[in-house]
Image (cartoon, rainbow, N blue to C red; front, top):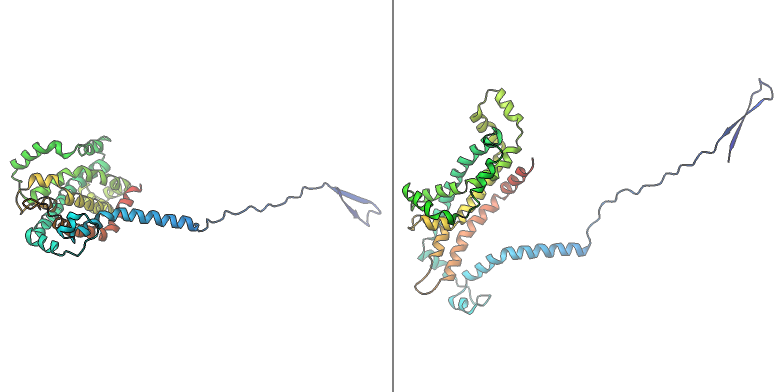
Length: 310
């Protein structure tokens, strides 16, 4: 429908001007439904989530719980294969510490792991700085270093034994730590590569303009920025060495240098295996490393997360 507009001007007489306005299309604003926020999950989804979490936690803790129960079982309960002990046999713990040098094994395990961390970091940090910051070795160097860890250690047992004996490092906690650190250096190099490459190269250029050489830049600039990754790698190397069995079994012969995994493997009587005492000794070594991982969990998770962001 057309709309007419009549304008009358008295000065011009009775002349009438008519303005015809064509019908315009009425624009209707359609309300666009705003993106609704996701609501709370239904009760079924929440229950399913907690069931999955509970099953995962149970599966993770089941071996530890079984070992706790074994440490408090009497020999008769162990032979009867019953799940729960008929009585709490605390004598397993007492006998384990009286008959076997558990504290010496723990000291050797911690000492070897500490030395291995120092050796691995002393080699991997300069190597990563040279590859990631100074562009030394090309793109294939990291792959070649990591490939050295692919082969199982059992294939190098004989040459490793000869080299360690020739160097005078047999039956020594320090020697064991040095060998473990050298064997885990490829792992440390691989884990630290992401942290060093995540640091912008402009930082090196700014340090060079301030008169810093490569060593000064590494010590004063790069190491503080890569500290979260270094802490995370230290924890991983420490745990790997602490739990290792094959290399300590090969390189240690006396109680003064044997680690806890080797000591537990030797806990056997004349004609029987003392499962209760072995379980107590295993828990004695498990508790410290669990507490260490629990207290350093923030640095471990934060460091690995930081290294994955580039």
